[in-house]
Image (cartoon, rainbow, N blue to C red; front, side, top):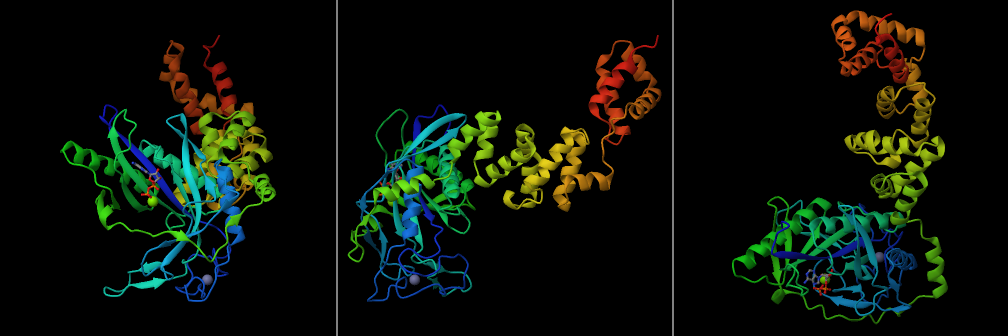
Length: 482
Ligand code: ADP
Ligand code: MG
Ligand code: ZN
């Protein structure tokens, strides 16, 4: 949708986040991804008759901490409800969820898009359980059911319909995911499905306050697809309206191969979940003192960290935002600063070469072969003049590939910077002798050639000459004799 469009998009997101608890939400089965099918089940999560659910205390702690992080109101008392539907991955025939009284109400998520800060309001956050998984791969005419996931604690974070562009939706999702990872309540793995998103999309005439009829796009499993799915759904709805039609309320799926959304079921076919109170669970009553204790345990979150990085280390807004986005990168940065005392240089190396090499190698910063200690060691060598910034590039690459420390690489490859004036003078004289025409031109007023001479000297020294010294000596030698 371009800027001059007659329409405005309205987007609301429902995020499902699996909680990183040891056990499932209502039984003692392990909550672990990737185990052989149906090895993590028991009578409770299989929905056998005569069993009773018992709420996982850790799941409560995690959802409350999430609510506190997003400034939600934490309900002193909330209730569980049964959401009824029939599907083979749901052995009980209902999902334990929350309906009228969720654990968290309201709240907000701060996003920054194009340098502009916006607060996106949350509707609610509630606690529920995941369903199992139907597996269709492996055979053309059989589907199988894996119930390891059935009963895994799931938190649903519902935004108000406050997002306006696919970019805002992605910024919101990233912020939610990063915050959950900071809190260590969800690993945010979209590929494995521990962080999933349904996107509700409608359009309306630009400037209108009314809400149009929405379509819900189910389970979009990457940031890129979320952006694409919303963009094509908006385009589709505009085309429908422009052709004189009406958008109908329905559930759609994103076909990433074709880059379109396709209808899955319309409102007429929609489920009537027949919610009713879960009779097997007492209301969840939260002790005020307990909630306050959890509030004190919250780590410093991305927004606060971003502000502190800018203030304490003099970083630009962009750098502070980049380095505070992921907790692992923020920790890496601060450890490097602690060891080197060089915040700006640390930021530049982390955002530049380290990020590039990690991306190429597909690695996580927490497992980087160049540890904060080693990066700090290299920064020391640059600061004390042992190596130049240029050599540092080569040293860094070698450190990354070999896992060695900077001093070791420098020694092994003989990369120590040459600062000895006599040695540099010899190279400068050689360069001037080799380039008489350029020398004459320079002395004739073509001062732009200075850079050419610097380049030649650096090249001849194998990049090892101290650049500051080279500049100083060249300036003196380029003066006309006499
Ligand atoms: P449902 O009952 O269909 O689940 P809800 O009112 O609970 O709908 O809202 C679900 C999500 O859809 C929320 O994130 C909400 O912000 C979003 N939403 C609601 N109405 C609209 C709309 N007209 N356009 C876009 N998103 C909407
Ligand atoms: Mg919904
Ligand atoms: Zn179980």
